[in-house]
Image (cartoon, rainbow, N blue to C red; front, side, top):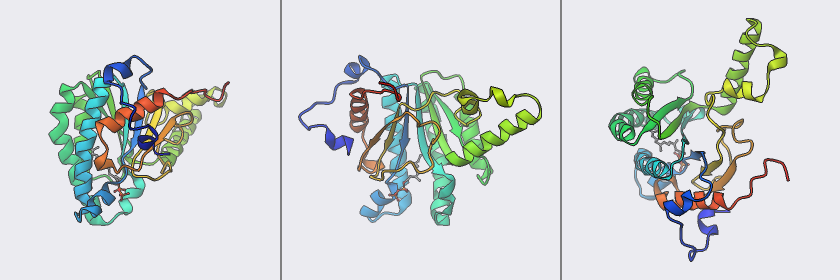
Length: 253
Ligand code: FPP
């Protein structure tokens, strides 16, 4: 069900102050889908949809800071996305680099710490460097950690973690009997970051698309048909409000 329409129009969205009186999720993850369709509807090149998507992301980061959320993780480029037409991939790489450069000061002013989740493999060095520089420049910021899943694939993340664990076992740094969920989690890109409380996917598809598969074991889901460039602060607040009505049982009664 689309959470944006599941709430009656007559129900007003609580203000940020009202939402803060209830349980604010510590960590929200977003699959920002629908940029291409948004552009196609307007007879624009797909990259125009991605550009519009960056603006929406900036708004959502702002509202997360206002709410006092601690972690926001966004799916910006999957390892499968390399298979898109070269023109789109190149455009996206340019866009990431430019967006990071242009937004760095504003992010810092808002106390946002940037963290890259993903592999360096195949990434143009100048793009990887811009993310790493941004990570370094924002490392002491304390308000919100913005995790950017870039060149990210969840199955690959798990395979890499298992390989590194095996390596540690071989070198006697870890015993097989000691291995548990917490240790495995610590070898993922997300490390000590708590699992997402809420996953929002825009664009109408109802799937996980190789995103945070381990980490979303007990995450609440919100799906909306709204295309990412049309997603608003108000819809984000609706998702939070919707999350606050849920009864999370973590498999217990
Ligand atoms: C999916 O929509 C979206 C992407 C593959 C790219 C998302 C990237 C951004 C919004 C830019 C983020 C910027 C930074 C700096 C992190 P789609 O192209 O699959 O849309 P479609 O399903 O309508 O074709």
